[in-house]
Image 1 (cartoon, rainbow over the protein chains, first blue to last red):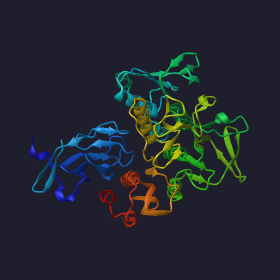
Image 2: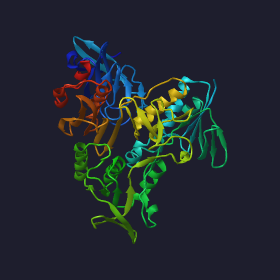
Image 3: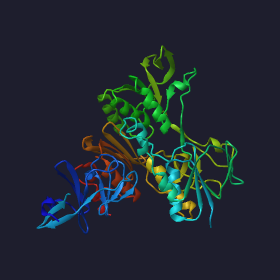
Image 4: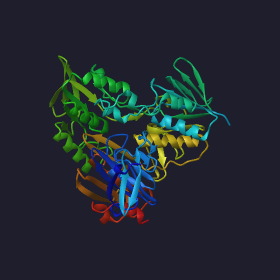
Length: 105
Length: 410
């Protein structure tokens, strides 16, 4: 695993538990989540229609799109509820010295 | 026990019911009888992304034929024109007979049509199915002035799409506000402002007296004697449940098929789901008929469970959306029974929501914002409503305070 693809997102206290922040890097938007058992990352745009998931609701391990209530599993990216049917891409996350990093391919 | 299950109606409620039955019952025969020669498809994009060429026909299907076949669900394109509930039989126009042990009726709803006293009925276009959307898309391509009769969801979504296609759009609404049947005036007025800013003309409080065709141009005469000249007329004036087939049967009807909270009709082994139902909602303790994406899906799923023997009450809090220009409007619950209104936000860029409370409990909320700005709060509101939570009004009205605080307090 090459080190250069780990991108720093911010400090761990920048995200409340059961919440998310949006992170833009180059041309892409990501969502980084803090769940009860750690940090996770997905693409930041819903696979159904081009809307930012940053305004969505995080519940348990799920993110719900704010526009049409498509639901994705945050850990696997699986589309769980229509109108979303295409899975959401997920990214590895690590925490080092209270800083969150995501690995973008 | 292996049964013959027939689903009459090949729309969203029908397909979700079929798949839910299959999840709970691997043995029974499941057959969907659809009037359109198309697999079940999504209707919301028809008035928006389909007209705008952002989505094509292939993007609309809920499931591919492979998925449906893999689950051993039969789909047949057939027009049923007679029902014999006593002998559990359906008859097609070609006199084919379909026998069922359990029947689900998910025939949806039909457009109300303008009654015009001349022979121009065929000159007014409606949009409910894919075929109609294709016709409108093709016909408007070389037209400039388009008039839409009816300022409800469908009319305004078409108005938004056609405006984005550089058409000159006029919307004529009989009521004193847009979307008056279910959307509070505060939000309707904000939507109206956006339409006007984008160049659409909105005419309220006016009735159509007559439509005349002169040299390929239509003149719409309104009840104040004004005349709108237009190249093309579309009407979206509401819908009625598709129950014609059952009018002379024992099936109890009243603004749709009457069902209880288990999707059961007045006839044993006959269920109904989706737009066609006037169903009992145990949370609101009253009957209601809904026409929305979420309802068609969830009601279909609930009917599927009950048909498969998994007794399940339908308790979904109503939720619906409309997308017009870059705005997303959302409604949850019921906004017509309240003793207090609380506003959150005053700028659609950050989202504006009106909450409708009764005895300090939110009964419904309606919000409007750019893209998904109101989605999270509306979703949290559904949960607060569902749990009858007494809410802190200070938090509700202060956009700087997150509404999930209200959930966590429980």
